[in-house]
Length: 353
Image (cartoon, rainbow, N blue to C red; front, side, top):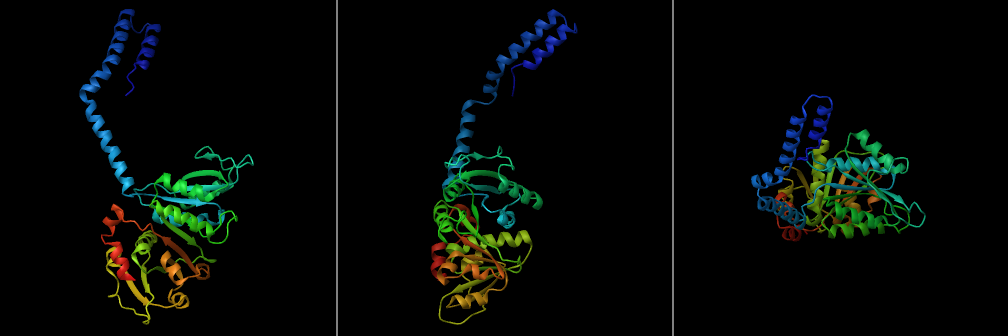
């Protein structure tokens, strides 16, 4: 509370000049203002002892420390370097954003330094759209979708480091990347996304890489998994999309045994049943990339990264008639994950394979 009595003294002076109050009353009220101002601090300390305030502050600090230690991250970070990919990234981020959660953070990456020597300028609210057309495109896309975002723009020559640093500082749960492996075309194919994934997943951040089809294909929704390590976050992401878009979801559980394709739901492992108890599950024993690709219908596909790696899937080939989201999980078992999916991920992963 502001108890300095400044406004009171101003009003008293005006009243004295207009002869509304007498000099005697003016003096009495000034003394009252000074006395109550000096008495405020001792009275507040008496009402709320300092040790109580210190205990509350210590409790809040301890809760924040435990939340970070347990990996309880919330929110989504969207690095943007290409205006064409902004709508798809924002659409995916809106599915991951709950009503009570923070708005998505949009990190606009502008190539190079404004001085030409690589100097970085970070501006959260001061950077005007005229100085960053990419930021303007992100704001326009969010406005057209009715989505609230937290924008941030940087000038940089090292996009990967900026993304990793921003994800760590913001304590986000999800990092949503566009499918281009090299944001600025300076890196060999596949190196950029893999570089970011390796660093951020070590810090407890799940990564979703969006591969958009040439023509929009959003239905049906298929989640392709093989084990719990990346399967649990893939199911989590697919579940968010299913609820947000109000569309049904199917799970395709694949393995590399020599037997033929099976359609039995009884073969679904416990970690899938715990993560998605009401979702239809199809199990498939497949031996080749071509066989797996043939089993995936056209539509929106959420695929765990271990499936891509083990079957050497050409994701860009799949996007000819599908939109694909590849999910890389952290592999950690935070308190939040155990609460949502109470299953031993190590045991589930071994049984699934």
